[in-house]
Length: 110
Length: 120
Image 1 (tube, rainbow over the protein chains, first blue to last red):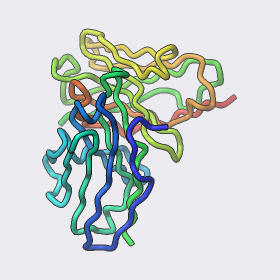
Image 2: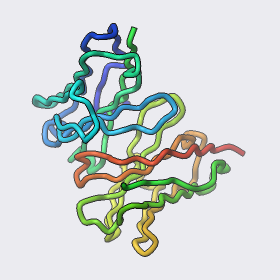
Image 3: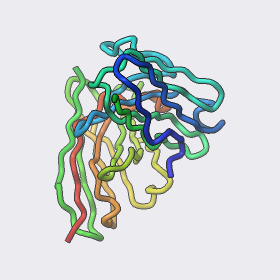
């Protein structure tokens, strides 16, 4: 059971927009920055969003992040088949003094 | 460009100790802005943060693994290591190392990962 809660799967058509939620508590998301990672099949996770809404160099502006209270959201616009992957949210938990992840969301581009 | 590479045995027997090393190139693990982390992913499952270490040897561990895990840093050779004692089949996973911004603001970059199977 993951500390952060994500939907197991989401889907949308090419060209459409999708959002992925990540729910936590006051000891983690409510007090810390959230990051998002994309994991393509058979590869290591890659940083997609950091500090709630910042994109590393090379990540297109189709990807966006936001945070409100104890929840965070990843948005992806102009969906492409190449966006099919697992997406994970992560942060620090003050109560556990440990890093925590969501269970991951599988994105299918129909 | 910073790169991380995991190395170690791919097969460990039950009750024995799993030992992995993460070699860092293109940067120093003595950088005071970062910790150095281990994360694992059982086959078909999600990510589990194991723990981290900084250049002084300060560590944080996942409470669920703390009794069996040791993470250490070797600044002279620019690598850090993971040991998991008394392994069982539940420890079978792809193990990743990564650079972690203080407070887990983010993890980047990640190593490519190494599969460790626990089996007799």
